[in-house]
Image (tube, rainbow, N blue to C red; front, side, top):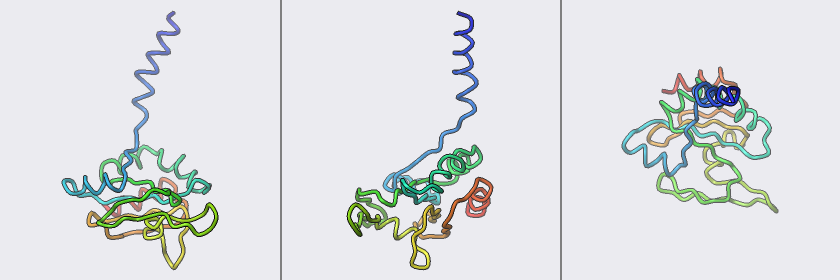
Length: 154
């Protein structure tokens, strides 16, 4: 009985205090929130099959410092580049554009991740509160690299 009590005590007291939760927004939510509380947007453009994207999801975006700075100073939006749903953002409707059988790319991913006529995953794009692009980086970013980028864009 005592053992069960201690396990519950650890679960409710120690474990939750050690985990922070990254706040995730849709483009529509971030746009609405920006009207009253303007902040830059950080968009993480990824796909389900990208190994480097998964590495960032499981390491970089789990770092407590990254979570804190994103939650405090930015609206964080993950964008699956192969999402088939329309996205209404900045007075436009962006759609999925097929380019083969069961393949394609979302127009918003193309707009936010294209550099030198290429879209590479993962891409981090930072948008100013007026939704203009102020920064893009293609490639895996570890926590230290992303912290440097975020601290220089606040």
